Every structure is written in C-alpha cells, then in structure tokens.
Image (cartoon, rainbow over all chains, first blue to last red):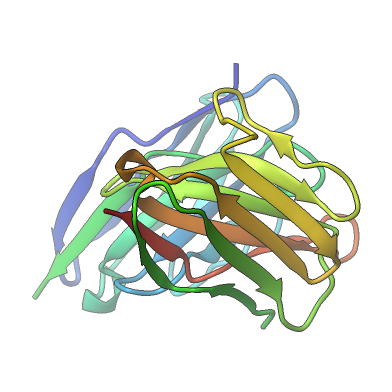
Length: 109
Length: 117
C-alpha cells in the first residue's frame, strides 16, 4: 500500500540553525515525491519536486530509494520559514497526490 | 504563476441544506481537478478526482451521493455537499492539474471553509 509518513508533527528551531523534516514513503512503483508548504493563511504551494533537483528558498531534498526517504533540509533556518510542510507522493500521471500528515515548523529568533 | 480560485472562501449553512463550492482554473485548462478535505491540524485527505466531461472518481469511503462533483468545463469543477450536517464542517481544497511537458504541475485553490450549524 502507498503511504507517506512524516513522523514529526512539530519542529521548533532557532533562527540560523539547521532544520531537517523527515519524510518516508511506501510505494510499489517508481516514486515521484514533492514537498509542499503552507504559510499562515495562504494556500498550499509547491516547494520542491525531486525530479527537478532544485534548491528553493535554501531548501533541498534528496530521494533515497534505499531508505525510501525524501527528507527536506535547510542549513540555516529563517523566521519566514515558519509554516506547515507536507511531503507528498504522486500516485498517477494526472497528479493524484497522497499527503503526509504534515510538519509544523516554528523558527524562533 | 497559474492560479486556481475557489468560491466561496467561507460558507455557513443550516443542517439539511446543500452547499456548492466552485473551483476555477483562471489561466489554464484543467482536464483533471482534485478535491481534498482537511480537518483542523490534520493532513489533506483526497476525496475525489474530477474529470472534465466524465464522472468523478471517488476515494474509498467517500459518499458520492453526498459529495456531488461536476466538471462541466475545462476551467470549472464544482463540489456540492448535499444535505449537509455538522460533521461535514471542514476545509475543502481543490487542485487543478496543468499539463506541462511530460508531467505537469498541480496548483491549489485557497480553500473553502464550510460550517454547518
């Protein structure tokens, strides 16, 4: 069965500290994984997709098929990074996504 | 970037009435849209896949007669919550799939908060 697991509900970090959000998946096919971010009172928006291998707002994520993980990392957290982050697994060609439970990140000065 | 708009953003209704929520892709055509439900402090739960010109595909456990989905045009999908009850109160979010190259990208609406009294 397909599943996306984000074990941390809340991550509280100090500004300038590194932050890592964990995501593990279970999927029988070739996975396509995403990170979405939802800032307070805003809509969900795409942060990263593994196939593009981009670094957005200083965040990176590497797909590790051996560990079935797609952890999100940023070396120096900023206050504006405070938001809800969702890891998502695409399960069909039309964009059907299965979301993890989400991790609330709070960056304190 | 592409924009997906939902209307209304908030709606309050009496128990037993029906409520329609619209999802529009403003600057692109979307043959496929998705409807999600989000409970407070919880993740998005996929309810159904809305396909232009054909019947929606519902996820297991979602009552299709309760949550009517219509995707009559390439830019509009509607979700109607029929005979709403307090337990239907939730945040409903739609997303639209824009084709681009081999894959495409999903764009999300701002969500619609339904409160059933």
